[in-house]
Amino acid sequence: MCIRDSRNFGAGLIPDGAQVRAQAWGLRDIGDAATRAEKERVEDLVNARIVENNAVQTEVLPIAEAKAAGAMAFFGEKYADTVRVLSMAESKELCGGTHVDSTAEIGSFRIVSESSVAAGIRRIEAVTGRGAEELIEERMALLDRSAARLHTKPADLEGALAQLQAENQQLQKELAQLRQKLAQQETQSLLNQAVQVDGFSVLSTPVNVTDVETLRQMSDWFRDRLGSSVVVVGSVINEKPMLIAAVTPDLINRGMHAGNLVRDIAKIIGGSGGGRPNMAQAGGKDSDKLPAALAQVSGWVKQNLK
Image 1 (cartoon, one colour):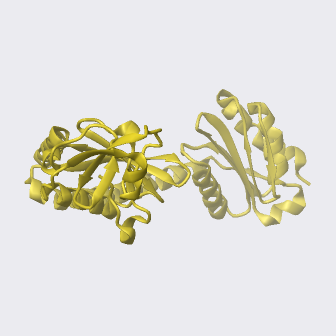
Image 2: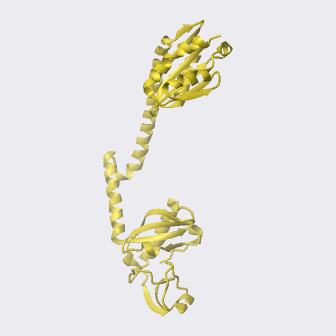
Image 3: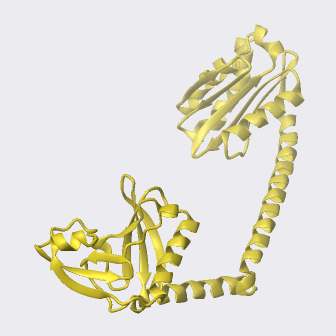
């Protein structure tokens, strides 16, 4: 049975002969991926024709006469001079596989998947008959189990899920705020580790973060609170050691250069790096040597100070 509705599906949907089975159909949809609404439209069109209970009429005709009568061939097959023609309502097709005596015997039609088979052609797979019934039973059972886990009725499941998502978002927000607060408390205590070198602060410390951006933010936070300073923070991110250095502008003319600093100490962790005089980062390979690299910062500052 060919489905044609130019308002929604362009040239239409045609059966895929390689996919037709007793309880599973394959349809080739010429166009873009179907939306959920379009798939529902296909199901509605097919199921509407099924319940019409149109009789399937069979006749054997010369292929030229069959084509002249409007019979359609969908499978790219080679036909003999005489072909079997099936008619149901306005649909007339050359024989392509399993058939029924009336459309009502198909039962229900439910789409289960969609995939791309070629440029501009997509395959929609569906189940019918007992296969469709089993699909509905499976989905209903899943709906009941999901509702039971959320201690609600199936009809109220969507609202319960929305509430659960909202609660999860709120918890994630509160967790982020708590982590930020704990990080601030930790960084406040780390400020006390800064040492004085010729009238300015030098801080080099490991921190526990999961991404480079947070590591950069922490270096900015330390620098802003220490005032005139050289700051180097390090962390192991994605199993790789990372370093970020920050230098206040007043120290650049005194020989302090963030790019040169991280370039030199990154060699200890088996890496390299560089950047601007006021901000730079470096990465390496040996996480175990990160503490040793950070320990070299004060010595580097004293050695390069003008």
